[in-house]
Image (cartoon, rainbow, N blue to C red; front, top):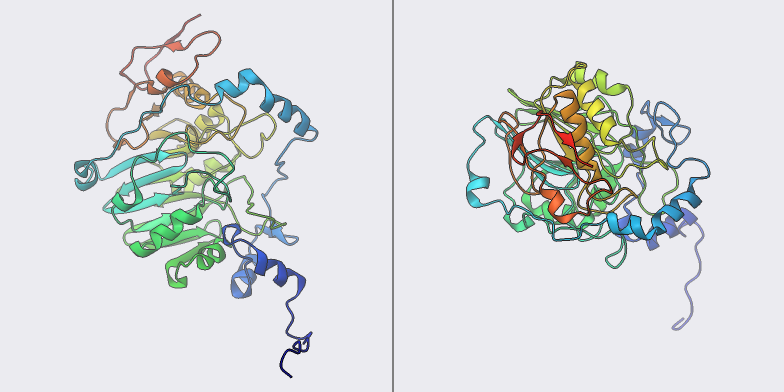
Length: 399
């Protein structure tokens, strides 16, 4: 009858999880279902209903929350966690973007963990985050400390977008949506394909990999390799998407991207199976004594780089996961300063470019401490070395 309420049909009413999904903001991603979920459940990394690291891993040390809160509220600490001036960026020119790398391999660090790798005629974009905040909200959460060096509209097409894991500072929904019309492929760890499909990526352009699985994009092979981290996006409960580092091999060059990870012995195995690497992109920022298992310190990052090359550092180390977002209690410039010190102590070849500045790992790397001009100096002053010296040269500490 007109005006009467429709009769309830309990057989078609959404279950509690489904009702939650209907209200769930798209930025939180989607629950894997069907064959995608079945494949996840067959993974050796999927144990007792969720993905797990091979060894027990703490996201936070026991009893550390209160101490961390005190540290975060320290006025002196807050001042040092951000730059005191405008971070300089390099705006890649048409010439930068148009000419192929003379050596066949060129890297462009775009800030945080976003890196464009031009390798043997292919273009691979790691963890692209063009958003103003790494957060599910546009009005809250860690805000970008420097502008993106290259607007997405000026980014030439890439052959593959590679994602390390689903945290907001690595998987940015607006950026993914903006890349869909370019026709690129997306290569991601298990489970993340559900998020991408929800956001509009066609299923046939998504490749999901477990650790040790590979996908070919043209003449380049992308392999998901282990990492020691975790996932988390919204109120999703168990670890239902996988995290990974990545080994990328072309006909003539090889590179490694760590994603986020704590230090673990598996780097040596990755290097033995997939190296030697011409360049490694290693997470060296957002570390803390409060979460030592899931992020590396700069010295651990240098150790990982060394492990990847069989115990003696080789190839060029590009420090990533620093400088763009304030995500940990350490001073803003400390990650790169400590990485430079560790590299010089071991003779490792290091690149520390401005965000957006392309470089070829085969070239001599000149380390110019550009970050010092916009950072508060340490209490005892900056370590001293001549600006413009080649990486690997010695330096003295002042004060």
